[in-house]
Image 1 (cartoon, rainbow, N blue to C red):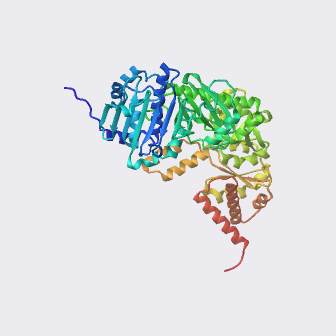
Image 2 (cartoon, rainbow, N blue to C red):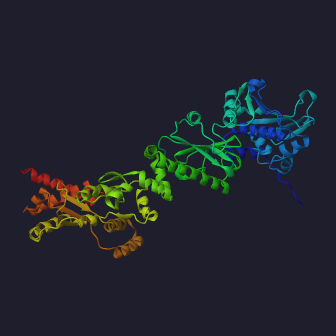
Image 3 (spheres, rainbow, N blue to C red):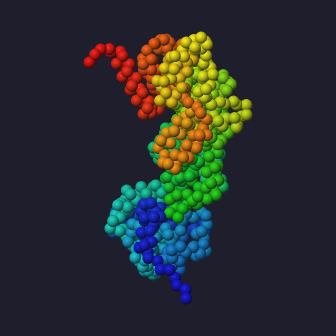
Length: 595
């Protein structure tokens, strides 16, 4: 024997309020959706039928209830049973024609949402010349359907919905609140909506609904100021015919967090769906805020977000192409405006350039980058120096930029977000582009070796110097290089940095992982950081001539510490101890005396 499910309406209402709808305010939207659908259905058969929705808040009705009247098609008694008393039933709705795509919502679940704010719902409806039908629904799941008495019957086809507020929902029924909600959700509806004596609809959207038509930029800038609270950098028309989408993208005038998802204002068939739609644009286009209306995109069950399907994916790609096209047009026709835009939103453009060749060419040509020879674009840098030699981190650039410049070695600072990845992608787009990551060994090969006799004379000094910094794990060498004012340089190759990280990890690891790290260390190439003393520096030459091994050690330790600090290298505990010893030792030698 088959049985039917029993539905606890209170449980359903609780489910709606806590898990489906974001706020009780959606009851106004649902009532407007039902009314617009009814008017649309009536005008399909009678184009001259009136199109008016009137809302009377409790202050207007005088009995504490809210009423909404429409001039729509109305319902018969049989249709009331099918559409208002059965949750999830769609077959009869389809037969009546309410499933066609020009309609906004569904009677059943939409009217049920009113129980979020009401204990009772009264529907008075008339279809054509049929008698007026009264439907009364209660929050506990009961309902009653009767033919309305003559004195309560409607004179014309249409529907009146009356809500009896819940005790804890009075704030949702005040005239200012209802007016604001009607204006928020229904300002663009193609019918007249009146709350009391206030008309809340404005008619056509502020953008052109005909793709390719010119924009009224002044009006749209005013709309952005009023609606979004921004004075946009630019306004971009949007159109995706297969989604029935028209609208605009406002380019934001100030930097925004690239990780923050941009919320877009989306209307479906002129009814506001959400002010915070996610996923309408690609993630890289975080600098644009869209306001659009669509007819073919699907809403989620709550009708407060867009349903992720193949059409939304195609729409997102199409809108991304239109934003990218705007950037390309700026590069070609308004380079100054592009430079202004990049100063504000370069992160978004660079993120797009990671996988878009056209955007990479734009960044290559227009985005100024830090170098040790001034601010240049990558294209300008290549024209001057041929090879794009770059430091992959900000610390590397700080450590090596000045010394590299003194050796006539131009270096790009690729330590900022996406810069290294973009440089390394350039040869993929243009095989003629040469790139090279700067290594410390590139500098040492350009340093000048000492005369053999001078080097022979320095051996005792080098022995004492090496002994002084042995515990730091670096090697001391003496070379001649510019600038003369720099006494010492601490250079760490990538393999040496890897060995240091391996050693630090080994010290923290347990026995099991320690064995794994020991195996890695055994296969790692032997490479040590270098403390390169500059023989052209007068102070280094004076230190090299000292005959006191202890004083030599203190001086070399001090030079080592200065090289770490100037190169922005991390200071380990052993380095801090060495710096402390050298400082106190030199201070003690500088202040002789007896306690």
